[in-house]
Length: 429
Image (cartoon, rainbow, N blue to C red):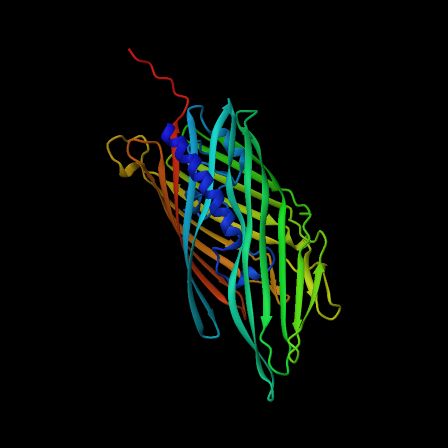
């Protein structure tokens, strides 16, 4: 147990360092991360990713499910859980017959869960929120005498959260809970043109630093249908609010003849905010062998303003109609042949499948960005002589929209859940 706790603490400290490093060095490579807060992270754990991120109604005391804090109350009195995960991505971008392949990897999360008292569970850990990472060059034709001007677009950074959550079961069928998190991070974006002897070079740099909070609430109602079947309803609400952040826009115009720069710094005061979010899920479980679940989530990004630069007025301020509401529909299943069979190891393995469809939250040139279609499969492999579990998943994500870049991503996730008896008392005779 000492080795487990020391290992967990070291992993948590290491993950803080890795997360802080990822704030400036992104693990995402996507041109779509230049919009809004970037690519919104999958905040599920590895076991749920095998079901394509479904989890609002999942209730299992052997796993940490941060998607709904009400699930924390399911942990039993002898259990201390610690879960950490990483993933690798292989992405293909296609546009106008041109194809580009990229790859990236990241340490995704580190979370823990323990029981504080009867029907009361406490969770903690680190989770991602968003990621920015891209670099590409465009060319604009001016005229026959000047030719084309090249522009370099680049961005990096992201937002992260350190959270504490509580789940409480006041009644046998009802559980409620909340997560409160410290949200922090910095993201930077820039557009730089290469000047000529008669054309000035121009550089625009956008930067925002966030230091604020996240708050969401959860509920689960579990109803037995028979001796072997039960139905669980889950619901969540995330609180939208201003982030008290002042994004900046720096414009440097370098004279082509004198090479002297003219710098303008613009600030959009308190221009970042998070949307209200809502989720509802349903899960049906049969004989503790088969679980089928479905989730629907809605993030009200359409009502959120975001800073934007207007060239004709040379202003940088918060503007509306840059985002659209984001909706996600997901289904998944988890099947374990016979968890009570002591003779066959394979009958303890969890087999998982899932699929989802997600609409975008950002707009590209005034129109909705690409929607996502995703399918996944995963395994939950129990470790010998232990209650711990290795969770593996593979996910394919297809993003597309008319006239925009097509994105096909294959992601492999690995998670290790340490699940050991913590408060057990042993009797020696």
